[in-house]
Amino acid sequence: MTNPFLDDALDLVTATENACARHHNDPAALLEILHDLQEEVGHVPQVILPTIAKALNLSRAEVHGVVSFYHDFHETAGGTVRVQVCRAEACQSMGALDLIERICRRHGVTLGETSADGGITIEPVYCLGNCALSPAAMVNGRPVGRVTEERLDRAIREARA
Image (cartoon, rainbow, N blue to C red):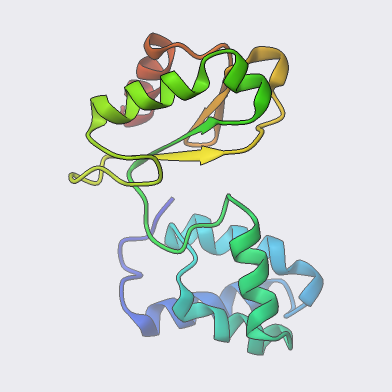
């Protein structure tokens, strides 16, 4: 997933140029490029947006708009385990907000933060498309339906293993 060797600006720029080149610097491939970078680097830092914009002949504002619109893209590195709990209406009606509060308290974070040890990030999302199994969550990209504290804890333990 995250490449620990990509920690300085030059490495980030090179990784970004390579990702754009793999997609032939095609502006229509912006989402794929961002997903590639998210996977390779672990996040999409602001410092690489001008490189993407230049390679794709887009404005920096266009690239920033896409990065900030989609909840899948993160500007900073998150925890080893990324937990997303749905806050949309169906999940709220099934207790998601109380669940979020309890999970955040247990891990010593507020919603949207990463724990001090870098082990877990708990994020809000607004609809995972799993309303029939509310409340819904994702743990490192794996959907978890009918979430309880116990089911979420188990998914977190599995993701850490």
